[in-house]
Image (cartoon, rainbow, N blue to C red; front, side, top):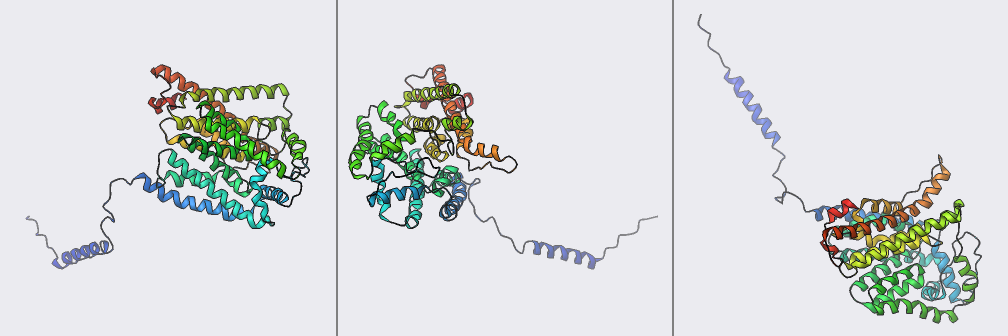
Length: 440
């Protein structure tokens, strides 16, 4: 039986086609070509700046307007401003009770003379916000100089990212909240390094000398011009604090109490808010022999690292100067009688070398140490209140010790790498970064 012919409904076919066309039109009614005909991949600096600047502006604003303006129980500025006011009013400057745990005025007469303009205003609340802002600007300026020192433009994302990361740290945050002078001192440190590396010897010495007057912890940095045989910078770094104190001594009311009251106090090790090895030993009652053994070992790490780095003072000056300064200062933080966690911002110059071909901070353990020093983490918990307090106070100490050990180990490994590759005269710049990072 023959098959029946297929009967098609023209009206149904036409309707189906019409619906298909209508759906296509609806689907394409709100569409456009690709918005930009750019490269297949977006340049990383555009992405970095797009992320970095909003985050940096947000964090700087929050730290200044919310945290620093609110302040905390620890108020370093009022202590300094009150002493400067006593200087202006011709009242004995060092008239304090040093066995109390309140913040004390710890500056020498030369620093008192430098800081005396703060005493021209009677009300500390009027000038405090401006002092905080000045420190924030100094920190940002220091980061800008460091960005240029490592060969990047200020249009590079390294600049905003470094601002964001810096203002995340405990060091910068508490410097602003406590309203102390460390931001200005960071700028002085960076300025000294820049001037030294650009052969501005007298200016480098003067800047270092001013930093030493305010904080004698910078005194070991005289080692840098010494090994470079830069006598102008060395002389300036020594002469400025000496001359300033000679001038300030007869001008400072009660200057004699600096030697009779304050110097003995500075020689003591306090057992609160002290992240140094001595503070740890004092707090936990560490046996003296064990404390000395640790001290000698860590001091030896400083010596090995610093002397080893000195071989590169002509071939990789930036690496040598920034890393040596960081390790010398870390040794001061850890091995002196008083170490404060917020001093750790002085490690920023060495950390910037991570973008260079060779750097201590290509080693992940160096970053572990930096995180322990700089992380804005408070470990207190009602579940372990005592242990949390210990961790908050003494993790920076662990970070400083780790950085000294990592630094000494890295320098030794660099030396071995040089010998293995037959590199002469400390030509560190020829070494392969990846190989060294893997070995270190």
